[in-house]
Length: 170
Image 1: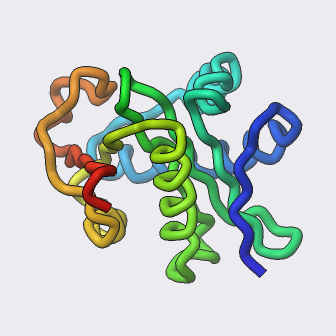
Image 2: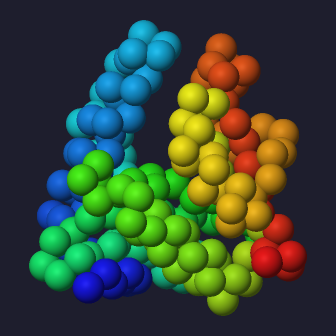
């Protein structure tokens, strides 16, 4: 049975690390194939764990999806500025995709964002991730301009989609 858990402390770091390794390995393969970019996966994970507090209460949210004893997905929420959050690191293991897990993770993150006072959520992803974009649109995210806090390198911005969800409309 699928459960989405909100993580409020560092007790599940080893499980999160395992999912992040899978996530960044998958993203790295996509970016290498499409753009010839190779990420420093170890540095990205080390940075996340050095700054894990941004994904935890009171301003952040970290959600894990479990199916029985198996960890199958994650989504992170961070604060960008007053009233505005960002969705990051949304990932569902490939064997578990197309089962509604991504939607369940998003719904949990959106509800929590609303509960802690965010009025909008932002996200970004490569244009080629059409399946992800279909999910985002189905959740009422709409295209928006690149936001100032985006970490997408300037030379790649033309290949990226930036989206926003107004939490007052959902």
